[in-house]
Amino acid sequence: MEEALTTQCLGEPTEPTNIVIFGAGGDLTKRKLIPALVKMLRCGLLHPESKIIGVLKGRTNEVWLNSLRQGLADYSADTEMNDQQWAEFSFRLKMIDGDLQDEQTYTDLATSLELLDGHINAMFYCAVPPDWYTTVAAGLHKHGLDNESNGFRRVVIEKPFGMDLDSARQLNHDLQALLNESQIYRIDHYLGKESVQNLLVYRFANSILEPLWNRNFIDHIQISAAEEIGIEYRANYYEKSGALRDMIQSHLMQVMTLVAMEPPVEFTADAVRDEKIKVLRAVRHLEPEQVKLQTVAAQYSSGDSDNEKVTAYVAEEGVSPDSVTETFSGVRFYIDNWRWQGVPFILWTGKRLPKRVSEIVIRFRKLPFNLFDTHATPPIANSLVFRLHPDEGIFLRMNAKMPGLTTDTQRMVMRAPYSEDGMDVSDAYEVLIHDVLMGDATLFSRADEVEESWSIIEPILNGWKDRLSVERYRSGTWDIPGMDALFADCVGGWHKPG
Ligand code: BG6
Image 1 (cartoon, rainbow, N blue to C red):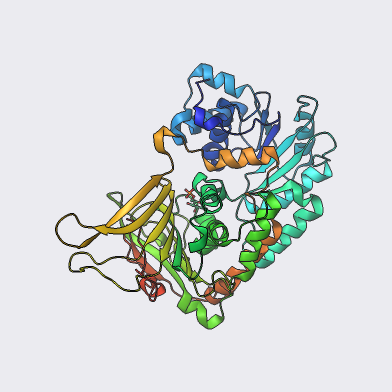
Image 2: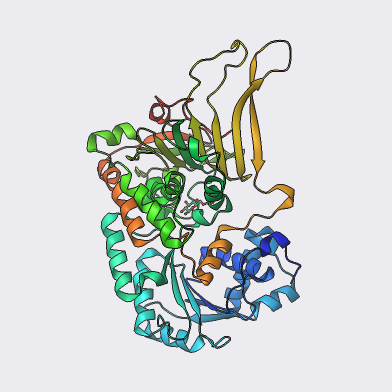
């Protein structure tokens, strides 16, 4: 194996574990999970005796292994391997060819779990479509594979966790009938992003922010994820989901809770999640008549992306030609508590936009009075930007004097890039798999959080349910109908990532 990057080695080593991936023939496994495990192994965060067991159907062991190796080359710039490196890694990979409904699969799995260093620890990762989560949990339970008498047994559940409030409740109910809540890790990869965790450190390890972090100084907050890509090969899922469910209910609302929460009493999973749930409980639910005013839904039409012509959403393979599914969504939320009363939190996301940028913009109130010449560039309201992707870091937009003999002002940006000095930023999946192996659920959603966030989204889904049409925007542009109106009374208006 190649030398590890020192910065990636920060973190406690984990115990030897059987890492079981259900759906190991799928895209998530080769794009994210295997590259993350390779990197963890290289830097000593995955115990070298750990085993990786892939459960999948209909492939030979050889075809499966080849596809994983190809995945490393295709999706993860620094994990391409030569033959010797691959041999050193792949001897710990084992495949079980089995159906998730078939008892034999779990029997085979039971015999494949290895006693490692005196324990049979296992992480079961459900990289399968959501309809299968309960089937897997039931199979594990029935065969005693969730029994923690001789090692930990933890089950990772991917998103989407439900498609609405009822289905999320049902899923929680079904999983909790089979597993202990402490064994369930509902993953949201946004929370594994270094820069999202860094938000907590910036907020609670720096005393200068706290006095400003409230309605007295902040005009509004934008939390966004703009993507250049379209829906790729995921029409089947996306047609039922849309941007609101896909990104806002999960990733962006989770980020909102971290931005808005009170300092927890200690840095433990439940203390942090107790504060996050308080935020969600304080989010005002939209009344039916507010849905039109406080939300935006739009769908991409054809256009240009990265200098190439791209098709409209409705022309994508698998999408119905009269689909009204939104590929862009924006929502203005309010949090009714002492800290945030009256401050709009505007969450927005979209596909086929001009660039891939995800950020949190804290826009401060406007100057009460401008003392300086304004004929050049009038002073702007300050913004503190947490860039989640790309170029992770913090930027403070300020006003400064223009050099020369006048008092004209100019805009300047104080930059604090997160990955200075060649620091390597870990992938979210490395962080989160490591957390599961360490038994740290801080960055995973608890059952009550998921239900609360769906209950906030529910009125919007109801308001949109019977729509017969949807606004359109040209691919590769920021011309989203309704977005300027959504920011109408916000200082500085809509911040389009620059
Ligand atoms: C996924 C969504 O959860 O997150 C995708 O289903 C989206 O639609 C992706 O593209 C974005 O994640 P990232 O880490 O690339 O910003």
